[in-house]
Structures are given as structure tokens and as C-alpha cells.
Image (cartoon, rainbow, N blue to C red; front, top):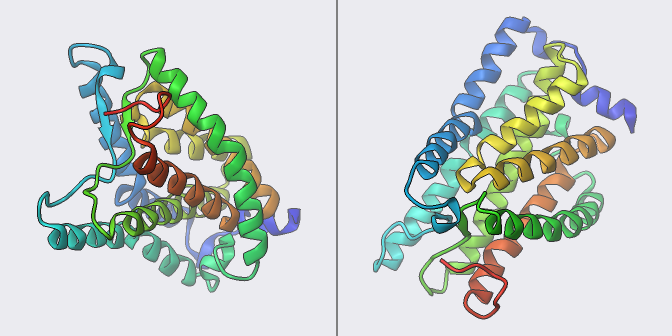
Length: 266
């Protein structure tokens, strides 16, 4: 398994391209995806931190209605947003195909479906519960905003859209922040610890809109995911784990809001 991980993150330049070209490519991919999200989240956090009152008195709303009172138009916007958010993944697939490998090089394929789903479910069970406790603690300490995972209208497509949104988040983040980024940083001759730190900080950065707790909690998750990726040589289990965590968070909030005392409300 170690040899497979070296193949994924090894230093051989991709497609015979120079390190300068690969470096520019990596920056551009991040600039049109999660790197830009990180900058946006930082600006969002500065705005929240400078608002009167504490962070816990403010909300970070996810999966909101795009056209209130117009369910079919809302659905169209939801599907449009989910689809276009995956364009950077298609770009990464194209860039990796240029090397003659494609997404299979980072372990995002159907070769090990049972392995991916089995380990993904186990990782989700371990990280999901601890992540919820961390969020509740950070919010109680005033270091986090109140995160509202969904506020979609009660229509027939609500939960299918939430599942699709969760899967989109998982594919986008794990393919780019783990598989692609580590592969490119390896080809750019970054050391293992530097690459791990870059991936973890990037993951934390685009969750900064949630507050300090969201930043550090997702950094820790990023470290764990990088270590697992290096062990397995596949992002498949990480995509499965991330998707399951978000599905439970989004769907669970919709089902439990106002029904349990430990779940913060908007």
C-alpha cells in the first residue's frame, strides 16, 4: 500500500511539464475553487468578528433557498449551484488525464467500492460525533457562529437536494484538497509535513466563516484525512466519509430542529 501512496504523491513531474508550469496550474485550480472559498471565508469571518455581540449570536446559513416562494425555480438554482460547483473537479480530471492517468491516479474510481464505502462509514462514525461535540463546545465558548446546516422549504425535493449537496461538497473537497493538491505538491518536491500542513490549513481556511472552532476543527480533520490518504492511496474512502458526515448533518438538522434541546436553533 505504501508503494501506491508514493505513486499518488511522488515527485515525478506530471506529463513532462516543468515545476513552474505545475505550480502555476495548481494556483489557478485553487483560485477557481477552494482557494477562493478560503479568501471569501476569511472576509466573512472578519465581518462577523467585528459585528456587535459575540460570534455565537450570529448565524452561518448553509443550503438556503435561492428563490423563496418559488419551489421549481428554487430547485433549478439548487441543481445549477451543485453542478457548477463540480466544474473544478472536471478540470482536475482533465489535467490528470493529460498525464495519462485521470482521477484513478488519486483513487477516485470504482475499483474498490466496498473498501471505500466500508472504511468511509467507519471514518464518518469516528469523526462525525467528535465534530458535533467540538462544534457545540466552540459555540458555547463564543468561538463559533451558530451553523444552520439547512433552511430549505418543506418541498418534495428538499432531502434529495441535501444529499446531492453533501456529495458535491465531499467530491470537491477531497479530490482537490487531498488527492490533487498532494499529488502536485509532491511533484513540486514539497516535503511530506509541508504538504500535510498546506492541505490542512487550506481545509480550515474555507470553513473559517463558521468561526475559530470551524477553522481548527477542520484543520484537524484535514490532518487525519491526509494521513489516511497516504496510507490507502485513495480518496474514495474520504469522499464516502465526508459525504456521510454532511448527509447526517444536513438531513439530521432538518429532521431534529426544534425537537432536541442540545441542537442549537437559528
